[in-house]
Every structure is written in C-alpha cells, then in structure tokens.
Image 1 (tube, one colour):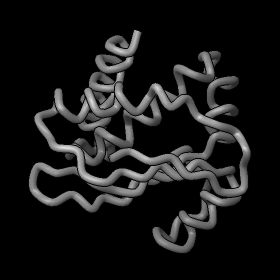
Image 2 (cartoon, rainbow, N blue to C red):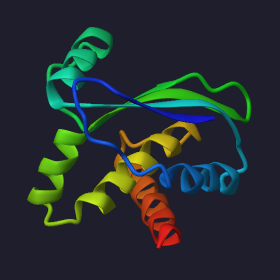
Image 3 (tube, rainbow, N blue to C red):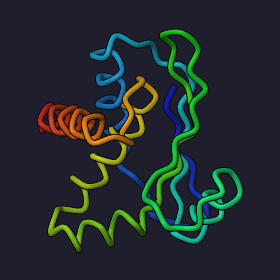
Image 4 (cartoon, helix red, strand yellow):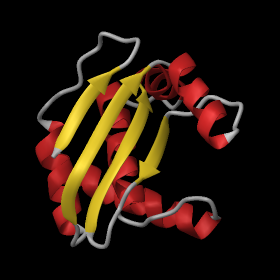
Length: 135
C-alpha cells in the first residue's frame, strides 16, 4: 500500500500517482509492501537529514529502505519546497519534477543507487523511462 502523509505543509499531492508508482514496482518485478511518502518542507527534511544521516544540507528526497526480498517497503521523505525550487532552477515543470522524485524513491527501494557516475546514469535513465510511461 502506498500512503501519503504531510508534515508542516498543506499542499496535496495527486493521488493518481499511486497507480503509476505501483506500475513501476511491478515493471521492476517487485512486490508492493508498505510505502509511506512523507511530504514536508525544506526545514523538516533538513532535520531528518541531520538526525538520521548526519548530513547538514538540503535535499529533495530521503529514502529509508525496509525491503525484504522482492517486497519493497520504506519511508520516503520528500521536500515539496525543494522540488519547487529545483523545478524553477532547472526550468522544468513542477509536476514533472515531482514525478521524477517520486519515481526516484521507488527506484531506490528497487535496488538502484546513484552515488557513482554510472549508477546515476542508470537511475536517470530509469526515471526518464518511467516518466514517459506516465504520459
């Protein structure tokens, strides 16, 4: 089950994304467990980053992985404020940037990494592939 939660914000995210996210999971040959998206602002996510990862910088997403075998579960924290800023900076549509980040979290739970250059290229390729599927 995919659930949405909101911390320190009132913005609502399109519920139609849930079906698309489930399709990504199935396409990656995984099973849906419990996935919680926690939508928040920059300050909230910065505190999560500091408290749990000992990182002192803003980010658009943090994924906590509770995957067991092929069943993917996790908590995915998303700063809608950071997505808005990034979409402006990158001259991208806000909704498209939001979908990219939502897919990014799911792809992390599916086992994709993005720390090394080659991993990042594969992650971007997967994001682009699934963004096209949304349209």
